Length: 340
Ligand code: ADP
Ligand code: MG
Image (cartoon, rainbow, N blue to C red; front, side, top):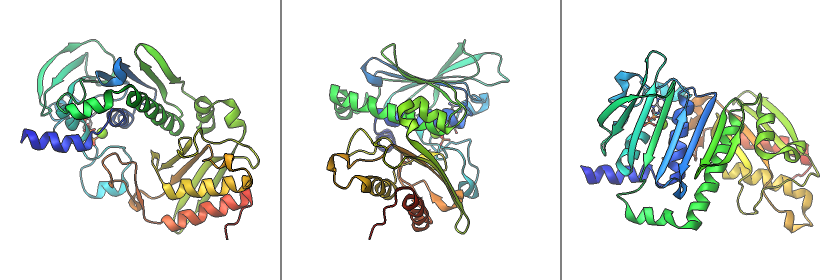
């Protein structure tokens, strides 16, 4: 059973970024709307990742099962999946991280007088607990990631890979920073603040805080609401004529797409955006890049399947064609390009 546990966990928890994403989403699900700190001790998090939030904490009666595989406090029934509003729902992350690293959790709810630190074992069971001194919220520490998967640990240890992972973490934090304007975020690596963002009022200010003033000056807001099928599009796109593109021609790293507040990869959508945006620059191949843009797609939760991949960054949309058509109508009116 230990081998089975290790194998299935190592499919859920594939990378450093993956751990960060799961812990961060747990914090957001816990209503951590004011602050969220991510600390990577030396070695880009491979030796220690710490995520601290000021959310509602974990109730004492839940701590015993928090890292038990398939325990979740977020859904009770199959129907709940149809109105899903939390990032997590499978109860897989914490338990899986326990199988591939050393995990401890410090938590305090509003009712608790003091916080408690729990040390978890390979199976997610609590092996020891002691009083601690943190305020309300939860801190999860993940030490020696992939210590029992030497090939994977080695793979992520190279300087090149570490830097790539750090960049991905930053991109991920940016995405959450943009979609959750009221969140205060800090990323610390090796005692140095790599990136931070203050609490702001709206998406535009969040884009400003994340991408800088020159970027936002060239972004136009858009809003589109349609019924049957119900789709709401909110976004910011480069003004026609504004050359404001992604840093790389092959990587849509500054095209932020969200489906019901979840950062996702939607190739069809990024492709469509690029096609219309770059049509302005047909004679200038150097400008054939992904635009810097944000698109927030809101659809009824029952029309999305987010359970396609363990990291939930691929989603299936029930009305994909209608969505692309609505987006295209908007892009045609913005950039005046009509694909034949
Ligand atoms: P899921 O997010 O799918 O419910 P996880 O394994 O990620 O599963 O977490 C298990 C449970 O532990 C959650 O349902 C929640 O009750 C609790 N939990 C984990 N992290 C936090 C946190 N930062 N704040 C509050 N509760 C948490
Ligand atoms: Mg979770």
